[in-house]
Image 1 (cartoon, each protein chain N blue to C red):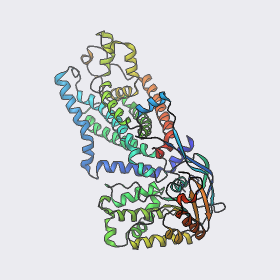
Image 2: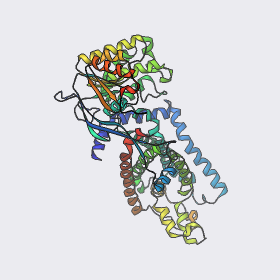
Image 3: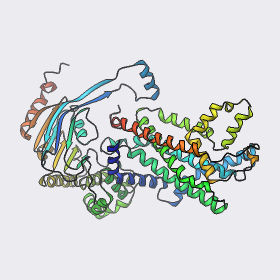
Image 4: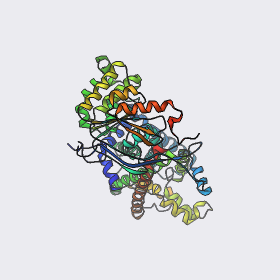
Length: 285
Length: 274
């Protein structure tokens, strides 16, 4: 793996160019282009806020429900877009790698990085909204924010490398990824708080979430931990009314450290898998 | 400035002591998969059914030394492994076994403008393709004017460099691609039938550039089915037949033998029974 990384370093100029190309094509050389690409998650947040406030009691007791959804929607959109983009990335550059030598991991890496840059810009939008307009408080837990960014970058990049390589050989991978993305929108604490799931298990209401192992599994999902972590590092706790009088759980440091290890392991494993397959890409029948 | 090369070695300039390319006992095997491209479902099922994979060896142990300054033409009928050998030299494929050593920077002209993006301007594509070929940003900035003026000799064409590539004709894209590739200052040029680009005037320009390369002592390896081109450019011809070297020698001698064989059924190959 060391020689692979050295080779990657030699081609850093190309990596930079590909990231620039991705962003240029995405923003189409106009300032409106950035607005267009940030609009869908914002509209989603607006619609979810409207629907959940009027049809459910998820939002009761949360003063800024839309902010709670937004801090979850930003990492979710990054995760989803980066993985979907990179699943197609090798095939889009197939004509190139059949004719020119370049370290192939540059291709999914550039998609992962350009999506990460977009992710950072989305946080800038959040910062303007939350600290600029809403005058939200800056919390001590915000200290964890850069760590969370790093964890998610490792997780997303590792999965991107894995999915992009797999998608070269198996056509049905992209459909599976799309299905998985649709399911995860509800499996992750985006529209609701993670406490809802945790306390539901002690209610004993007979739902799936009453089984403690299912809850543990749910909480161990690195993406759940990250979304929950972003929420708790940036926003202060809602009133106890929001979770049926239960206590709002603080930022869970041991889980976040575990998530860091998991994310790093995913990155290493994804890169190892990619390297084991990358020379076969051009020999695909 | 940091030195960088496309060959994996840490030197930019060739050492000139050994051969430019040395190939020792290279085999290349491809996996044959019939019918449609794979799905994950099929892969899982096949794993349980243990259906054996089929393999086809296209190169059977090629050993070859190409010295600096040689211009080697690879000839042979379709499917003899010419393009595979060229792709192996350009590091697009990895040999199944055996080893290929390259001394110096390689310009792979297997396809001109691979990676051009229609929504980006000529200039942006120039920077991107340059980077794909391994050029640094400062190198590209330095050579920018020279690349543009080589590709587009008239001012009205050169003006188009700021417009998106979708407004370019195929010939113009080729010109740009060729111009970028030769400006990477390679010591080894790998060419696959791409010299027939652009109009007559541009082709003449390409050949002049190739002659310039030869005069500078650079190495050229190319595949061609056009014996006029082979006679004009090559100093040595390699005839590949069914994945082995059938003949290797001076231009006229090999071409004569090749032409003679091509008139016979199955190239006079006694091994073919069908």
